[in-house]
Image (cartoon, rainbow, N blue to C red; front, side, top):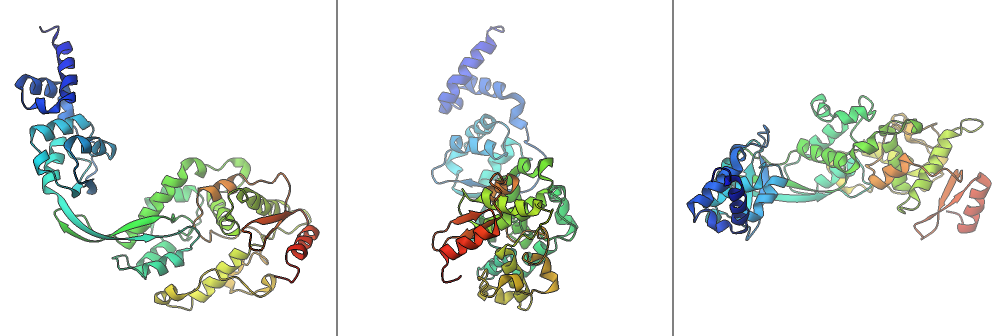
Length: 393
C-alpha cells in the first residue's frame, strides 16, 4: 500500500478536481488532496505588501476566480487557493465587488480577504487620445471631477522629481536630458481615476503622481525594452527617436506613410554637405506658438484654448520667443530638443526604421485626402504645390 500510495493519490486527486464537491464529503479524498498540495497551501507569491484591487464578478465561483488570482499574482497555485476556499466554505459568502489583496498573502489569507476586505469605489475615466500634448492632458483634467490636481499633474510632468525618476531608470537609459519634461512618455489611453474609497484597507484615491506613474507604466508596457535598445547604426538615443516619432505622428495619420515621412526628416538630417539640416516641420512651430500663448494664461483657462491651430502666415519667417526658438524648425538647425506629444508604437517603429531608399526630401499634404505626395527636389515640391494648390494654400 505504501508503494502504491503515490499512484492512488494521483488518481484520486485527478478525480477530485473533476468533482470538487467530493473533497469535503469524503475524508480520505480531503486528506489526499491536501497531501498532494503540500507546502503550496502556505506559499506566498512574494513580499510586496502593496494593496491592489481584485474584482469578483457577478455569479463568480471559487473555481472561476482561482485562475485569475494566479494570473494576477495573488496566489502561486490556484488549486491551493481553491482547496482552502472549498474547505472553508467560501462560496456562500463570496460577493461580487472590489477586494483589496496583497501579493505577500498566503492562500488562507486571500480566502479571508475575499470576505472581509471588500471596498466600495467611485471612479471616473479620463481618455487621453493620441497626439495631444502635456498641456492638453492638463486642460482635460480641468474638465473632470477627480482628485487629480491639474496643477500638480502639470508641474510633476514638467519638472519630474528625483524620487519619481529613480523609479523609472529606463528614462535615463533612453537618453532623457537632465531637466527635460515627461512630454513624449505619457502614454495616450483611458485611465480610471479613483475618486472615493469606503471600506477596509489603506487604498487611496488617485493622485497626480499616481496618474503620471500609470502613464509611464503604460508607455513602457506598450513600447517595450526592445524598441528602447536603439541599434547603433541609427546614431540616435531613444529620447531622440521618440522626438522624431512625435513629429511623424503629427505629419501623417496614414500607417503606410509614416516610415516615408520619417525618411524625409532623416534624409534632411543626414545631408550635411552643402545642405543645412533644417527640419521644416509645421507641427513643431505650432507647438512653439501654442507654448508661448499658454505661458500667458493661467492653467484654469487652458481648457478653453484651441490647440494645434494651423499657422496662416508665412511659417518660415514666423518669430517665436527665444525659449522656443529651437522648435522653430524652419529657422533652427537639427532635431528639435524634445517630443511635442507622445507617439505610439507605429510612429516609433517608423522613426526606428525610416524609409530612405527613394531619397525623398519633401512631402506635401494632398487637399482633402489625408495623404501626402513625396518629392526628391525643391523643384518637384514646387511643381506639386502648383498642381494641387493652384490658388495657393
